[in-house]
Amino acid sequence: MVKYTRLLRQGLLYLVLALVLVWTFFPLYCAFVLSIKYPGDFFTPKYLPFLQFQPTLDHWLDEWRAFGDPAGLGRGLMNSLIVATLSSAASLALGGLAAFGLLLTRRQHLPIWPLVALFLLPRFVPPMVTIIPYWIMMRWLSLADTLLAVVIAHTTLATPLAVVILYGVMIELPTELLDSAQVDGCGWLDMLRLVVVPLLFPALLAAGVLCFAQSWNEFFYALINAQQRAWTAPLSIASLITKDGIEFEYVGSHLLLVMLLPPLLALLARSYIVRGLSLGTLKERDSITSVGPPAP
Image (cartoon, rainbow, N blue to C red; front, top):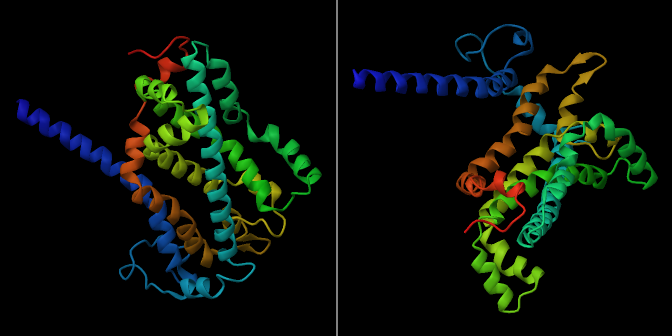
């Protein structure tokens, strides 16, 4: 009886995992199928190449020819790569300093929840509340339709995520290690540079990948800012909706090319991401409301 119960549980687990995989990868498969269909098959429920329809690579060849054109996907991908890289680097720098400041505040037996609430505030404010002030400020600073304006917006959105992840890892560092560095004459910046940062490499990589993915997929602020030059990859997909209809011949290839990079980065750094996100999860909730030193 115990054996059959164990088999039933494993079967249900595998069934749930299979449903999750199908739910996750079916949109990608639909985009792939759409990218190899002839125009006459766009509106037909055919999903099996060679069995239900004859595939073609004409759309991918057209995508490659137009990749470097001003209206092609290449410019959007390059702009998104620049914006996501700069915003994730800025978010890690600001988030690391903020998390280290929270750690020092906690070591001085002071409450940190007001600072945590302030750092997380950008994640709780709806974009519709800030989009008009953001647009006015960028025009006043002569940054409208520039990649720097998008970097500023994405850094504001990603910094709270970096603060939460990095602070959750910093509280796991042995207090004796920081005390020893302070006794040896390290200032706070030297302690952060020489002691904390080398130990936080997995968490930094995990937070960087998540911040990169968030910037890569952001659409609203990029749409408000873009006019001609600051055109990102999500906007390149949205531009396929024209006054004459939807350019279905490019929808599938655009989607696949835009969605490919974040999962690829996560796959390459999966071991660091799992390790970085798993550190500090047990003490993070208690430490945010704590007013005393960390438990030994």
